[in-house]
Every structure is written in structure tokens, then in C-alpha cells.
Length: 345
Image (cartoon, rainbow, N blue to C red; front, side, top):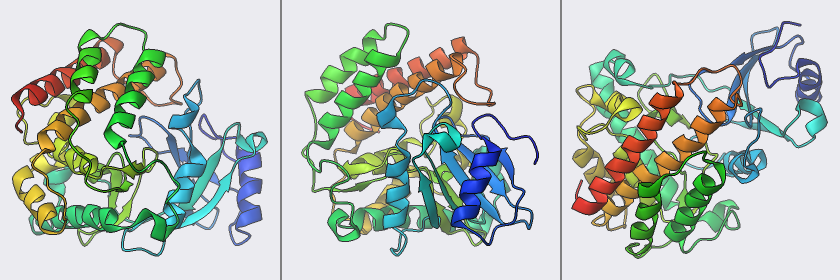
């Protein structure tokens, strides 16, 4: 058995896999898939070449509510037979004696992750608008689902979504950050005082963007990935998240400034939003509030990731230097302030 990366105990995990999939062939190899900055994702390959994917929490101190493996597994299992493409759900392990933490396993979906501008420029030009349309239509399809109809009606509270999110991410920074963030705290109060009325309730992915989907070689979404932030509530948060990651804002830095859709041919953020609007009953006129909120929320998430990297809790992955990571978080907070103040995209 080959050496396994941090976060995998190969003997017990291999035995668990063979109990659930006797068709697999020992030994297994385990490879940490780079690019993740929260839960750890591994490609698992058996001796015959069959590939699976294993997800587990970071290896250090974590907030339990932010790394609920049973929740992720439940969501992809519930969406198996819907128009929303997800990987095949194989199994959930909640016996920490196996691997030191809960984990779940899903089927490996063939395709490509289109992560940054270079990846976008490598896509055949004729496929770029296909990807945009499929990405947008898949989100619309997710939002059209009644959570109760797919067995997810009790996944979370349906109402008061934005207020709950504001409390959640403020609490994460209050409890997890190692520094003072006064503008972040001020923005919390300004957001809370101007929450738009929620238009119904749906399934909110929580981090929907192109590089959180496996894109098929025909340009369509082959599988929506990374459901760790999924909940119920105001689906416009997802629309704003996709808009935030579209790359139209010249102020965007770091990852936000290097997104695939900066490549020519994916279309503009306005065009993407118009397509979503044609297939949705939601009024998106308040979207600037949601986009500002998404920058603020990403700042909270990124601050948590920064602290975990500094503590060595992210396995074998390498992060940016702490000063650069702090500057990136602060830039997100500043952008949130500017968009909220201007009230426009």
C-alpha cells in the first residue's frame, strides 16, 4: 500500500471502501486534490483504475457546523434523480475510528475544473457560451426545486435567510479570527438594517460558481460540487455569488480578478443575469445588496481559511503568506463597503 497524504488512514479507509463496494480492487491510492481551501478532497483509485472521491474536514481545529459531512452527503443523495447534476453518492462514514473524522465517498465524474482565466482561455471558443448558459440554467433548475419535494425540507430554516447568514459569519469571525476587523463589524450592522424582503425559499448552494462545478467536455455542467455551505432560504444569494465571481469588476483582486469568465466569449455578467431572470420568477433589482453581502461573507470565509492555514490545519496544501492573506480579506471587506454604499453593480 502506497503512502497516503495527511488526513487519510489508508488501512481502515480501504477496508471501509471494500465493505461497501466489493467490486473494488485493493490496494488503493489516495491523492489530495489541490485547490480546495476548506474541506479536504481526495481522489481514490483502486488497483483496476476505478476512481472515487473522498471528502473530509480539515485535520486541525474546526467549527463543527462548517464541516458537516453528513449534510453534504445527504444533499447530493437527495438530488440524484433531479435535473441538477451531482456525483453518485456512495457512502457516509461517521465512525471516527476509521479515519479520525467523518467522511463521505462519491463517484468520480469525468470532466474538467475551469478554475482561472488561463483555464477559460484554454476552452474552445465555441464552448464558452455553452458553459455560461449551462452554468446559469443549472442554477435556475436548482432554485426551481421545492426543498420538501426532494426530501430536504428540514435541511434548515427557510425564512430569515439573510439575517441568519449575517449572524453566522459574524460569529465565525468573532470566534475564529486572531485580529480586530472594525469595518467588517460595521458592515454587519449596515447589512442588517437594510435586508431586502425574501422572495420565497429554495435550496441555496452557498458557493455556486464555475470552478465549483465539473464541466463536461461538451460544455455542460457534468456535476455541481462543494455543497458544504448549502442550506435553505433566499436563492438570490446564489445569483449574487455567481455574479461576484463573474470577473466584471475592475476592483477585483486575487482569485476574484483571475476568474475563467475574464476570457473572451463567456459573455458579460449582465447577460448572465438576464438569462437567469428569463427562467426565474425572482425580482433581481435588489441584487447589489446581495453582491455586497457576498463579498462580506467571502471575507469571513477567507479569514477562517487564513487562520486555519496559519495553524497548519489544511493538510499538505500551501497557502499565501499571512500578510497577503490578510490583505486579500481586507480588500473583500472594502469592496463590500463600496458596493453597499453605491447601491449598484
